[in-house]
Amino acid sequence: MGRTADAIAEGVAIAIAAARLAVKNHILIGTIAEGGVFDMEKYIDDAREALRAMAEESENAADAVTALRKRARGRHSDPVGTHDYRDRDVRNLRRRAKQSTGVGARLREVMEDRERLAEIVEEARDAAWADVRHNLDRRLRVEGMRPDQDPDYGRMREARMQALRLVDLQALSSEQRTKAKRQKKQQKTEAKSD
Image 1 (cartoon, rainbow, N blue to C red):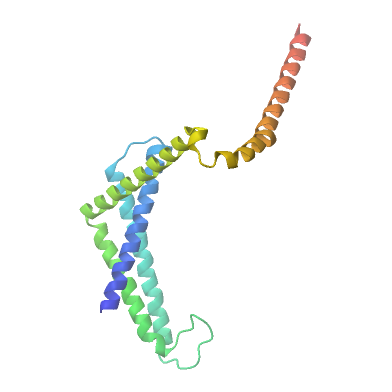
Image 2: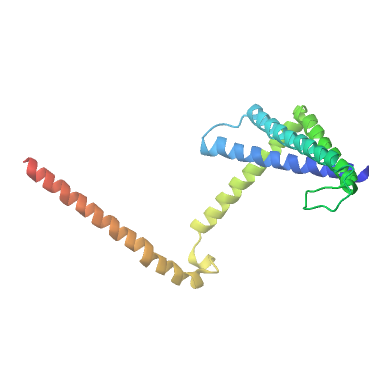
């Protein structure tokens, strides 16, 4: 019983972490990319939906393993491949089905627990804020850094100068040529209309 309970607890923990990650991504997209506001109820629904999908996945896995177990019962020949189960695998397949069923059932319990869902959303919001804070901090350090604060400045200077010559200056030159052509064309058009 201990191994099964541990496997169920681990499966639930993994599923909740995946739901938290999905909600975090929804928060980042909804509030930053789409300019929306944080709506606890919407994200609780997102968490519930993510858990529902994982519960169904666990239940489907249990059904599939049960079918494999029934087919394996009474078969005593040597297996042909990895998923060609035999009678000696029946016990393990039963345990796997029980674990998957247990994970699905626990996830459905969490789906009905509004407090637990709100907790998942709060953890997701904290994780989203940590991502934003980390990205801002990194950008501000890089963009606001002076040469005397950058330990790699000397070593990377030649690469930056080469990138400036090969990429930035060429792009600027190309842009200037295009702009000059446009102006010349516009002048010809204006001259013809006069």
